[in-house]
Image 1 (cartoon, rainbow, N blue to C red):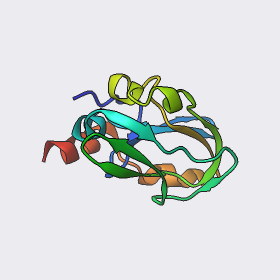
Image 2: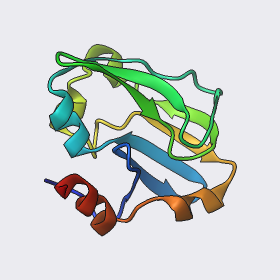
Image 3: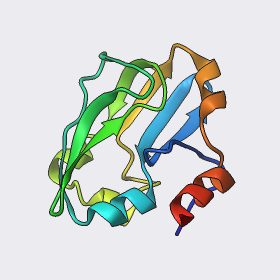
Image 4: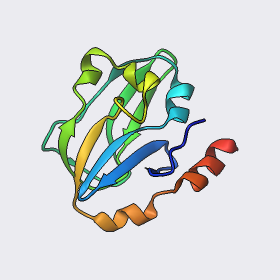
Length: 126
């Protein structure tokens, strides 16, 4: 299972890439493999506020519908509009083109609460 070391993770299987004050967020390879073929992603509105570990949307797959939780608090600056026409890009490239949203951090210290790659690997190994 691919768990890039440069990313941070949540116990709910979201990943976060921090670049300055912007967090790019998606779901992990483990999460997409558990869901199966993704058929729809509910995206937040650009400009909307997201809160730490509160749901900001859903992912619908052949097997189930799951909430997506924000790993950080802030304002949505961009959403991945490709997901509207090709939600299965998350299945193919969860860490690259399959990102979901970008958030301007309002509480950067929350990053410290996220898991590193080895901690996340121990969760998915159970």
